[in-house]
Length: 171
Image (tube, rainbow, N blue to C red; front, side, top):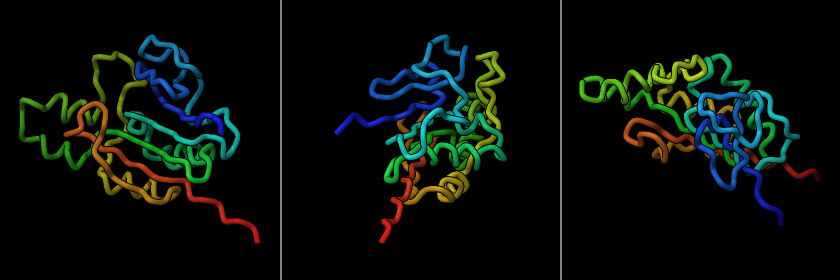
């Protein structure tokens, strides 16, 4: 059995071993990914990827783009393949609004992105409630779960995972 094909989409400076790290050319990080392309149109055949991970990426798309983005990521995943998304969680951001010492990192940056990048690609275009993002993922995936984030600020962020449903066998 071959090595699992796993994509780290919108990798920026998060070049992870064991993944094909993917980002657009000349991204803000200055680090060259393994593959440069628009992650809304992946150069993979249908049902060929074992895992798609997008850590702090989905919030950089307009809300109306996300169904098509998820459709594309679903397309390349094998049946039984996993999607992993992490992003700021509006449910948690609201909690931090009354804590002025955390306003920038846990509220304003979560909502709008960090202006320190000086890059319009790093602007956030939406902030999701966990119920909303899990429902969007649930349109294309099964076994959708909201879990603790493993990157950035776990107390502020969320992880949403799902599985591409197995194709029915022909009779």
